[in-house]
Image (cartoon, rainbow, N blue to C red; front, top):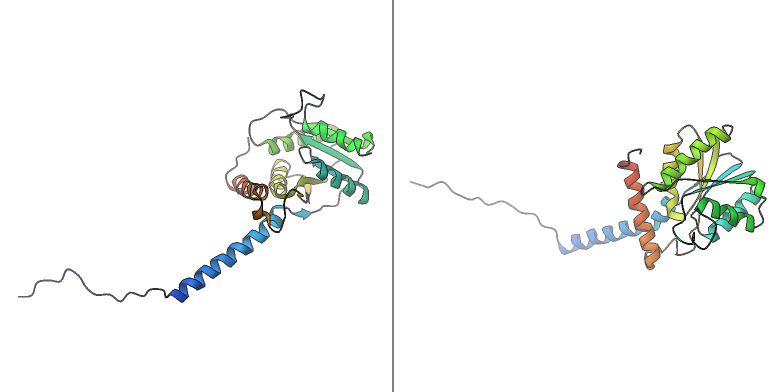
Length: 217
């Protein structure tokens, strides 16, 4: 009498060392391609036909200078600055918001104060960009309902997230985006500096968070 077998043989196919090398090569090349394209993806430039620039007031001074050159060279007629309460320096200055400080920076660069308006938002603990967009929406509704489109100016990799949030807050408006190049690190080799690595990774996570998980406050 033969007892039933408790096991059986099966042919097992395993990768060779060459296959592993090919997979590693493909993986490394893929990571390299993604890394090289991340900055450009997060920093879009897609303008709409408008004579109004909306500037995120928290951007660095070099970005404000670049934005002012865009304003002059492309013959814009109005700048609106947005932003919330200052987190540093407000005790030593009379500026209480990044929107007001950014406006004054433009004036110091030589801009006519009659062609720039600041629209600050209230203090909030989260979704600050979105709340800045809502504050602008409310202001436009009351003061400039004739403005139907504008180009948003932000800094580097933060731009795509800002663009998405302003569009989310104002779906009735046609909004373009101008990403000012972030000069604090290399756009093509951002991973070679701690500033670049932190910025790109943080903005990538932040963008996909608001894209898939954010609920309107």
